[in-house]
Image (cartoon, rainbow, N blue to C red; front, side, top):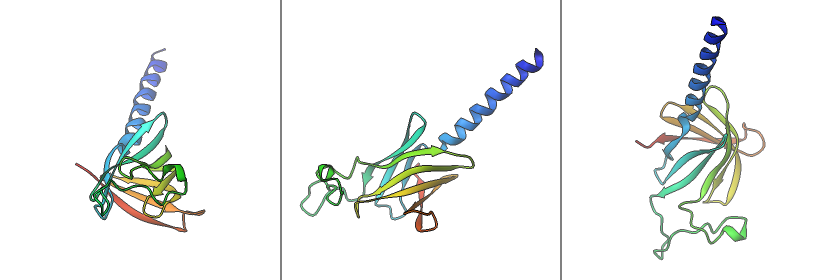
Length: 143
C-alpha cells in the first residue's frame, strides 16, 4: 500500500511538471521586426495567439488597419489589431507545439505552423504542405 501511495504521489508530481513545461509558451511575444506583439493563451488543451499590439495600428488615414486581404469577405472589415493569428496548437514534448495554423494579415494567407519554445525565444515555422517548405522566424518573450 505504501508503494502504491508513493507511486501515485510521484505520478502527480510528474504530470504537474509536464503541464508546467507545456504552459511555458503562455504569455506575450514580439515578432523579430518589432511590428507586432502576440499574446498566447490556452483554451481547453489548445493554444491560440492574438495580435494585441501593433507598432503602427492605423492606416494612412488615421483609421485602425483593417484585414483587407482576408480571403473571407466577412472578415475584411475587422481590425488587424485584436485578431487571432495563431489557432489550434497542441503541446507535444520537448517544447514543440504543432497541429495549428498561423494567419499572415499582410498577405491574407493562412499557413500550417509549428512552434518550438527555447527559453525566452519561440521559433515559429509557417509552411505549406511539408515543414521543409517553409520559413522560420524567432519571436522574443515580452517582459
